[in-house]
Length: 156
Image 1 (cartoon, helix red, strand yellow):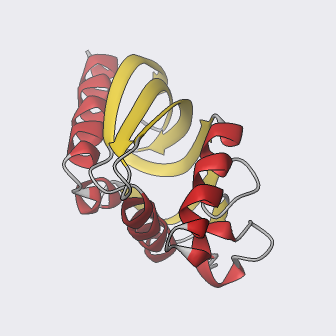
Image 2 (spheres, one colour):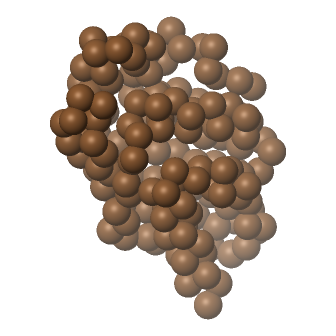
């Protein structure tokens, strides 16, 4: 029963993200969280506070307004004091220039007593990096930053 509740909460969280309501998801994060997004691009890197993750979501939705998530699988293991969640998803958005963006990814998260303490996102980084480079050429100069140059967004 516990695993079904967690699966439902994960799906509801992604529904909130599809509605642009990332604040709903942020309320589930522990104050000290390890959030990472794989790759070497403007959205990659590690964040360790809810505020830093909030800034990450703000950038994400600025680059990809109307971002939609489709959940394919949610796997849950463990108990309330140490729960692991793996989610396979697809994303899509209409870019500012009218083109469609599509990508696929995985999320590995760890919860303790209902709070997210780890959240690791693995999206097809080549597809994402290529699109961020395109956005940088079309009015979003900060989309060209990489993990090593976007330290202003990495709060401890």
